[in-house]
Image 1: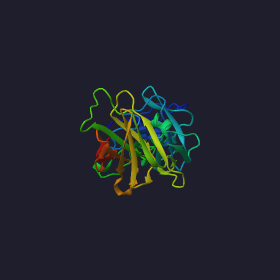
Image 2 (image 1 turned 60 degrees about the vertical axis):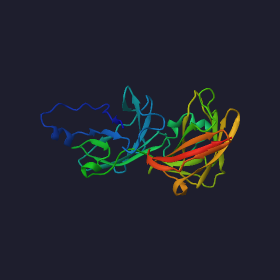
Image 3 (image 1 turned 90 degrees about the vertical axis):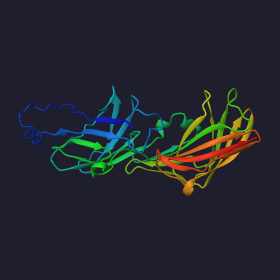
Image 4 (image 1 turned 45 degrees about the vertical axis):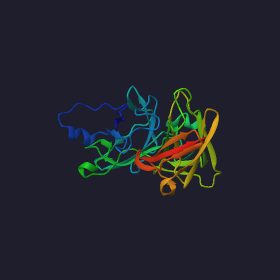
Length: 296
């Protein structure tokens, strides 16, 4: 878990030095300082454990009329790329924020096809809300404050994740030849993300598709980011040594849920069988899918 600091810096306004800080805050607009965590229930962003240079977030609140204000990560901190958020008085303001930023905001549509999986940061939608601040307390803390009796205002993953780890079973050796790729069948790959409330969902009216991915560099673990959707099982085909190995992934509770990572161990056997263990939910919130045996 790494803490992110998003700084909404004052631009164009120099605060005059004064021995009475409250007097300054009461008479001069004060810029907001935003502190943000990604939830402790999350081990990492889909695209990595740290923010990248150039990442942008969108910040909104309703009382002052700031909507979808972009801030961009530059030199290790987030800076405004246009509008700067200021408090005008001591009345508390409640903020929300999302990632990745889109200039239009609102309801965004996206696909989680094989091309999108190559740049998962673009589909790893995050949302935070409930953080409040004012001129006297200008820090907007998108953090989990439940340990102190407060609210969890940290960023949370809005998508679902599926992680497969491939193990060699009886008569199979991955020393010289490893699985070359796999296909997940029967998924809805199209969906939407609402930047105003953090709702991500699959387009249930869309045609179900197969998602074919290549394993490169000898990788034996692979993750995909998917829209939350109702689905009881997912067909799996693993390609190993030129042969297809087939199995079925059972989805707990009949749905891929927001913020969950469904983890499966897939064991490939020489008789053509793939054995897949049952899924166990753990924090991304990772969901341990269990063991899967694949035989030739």
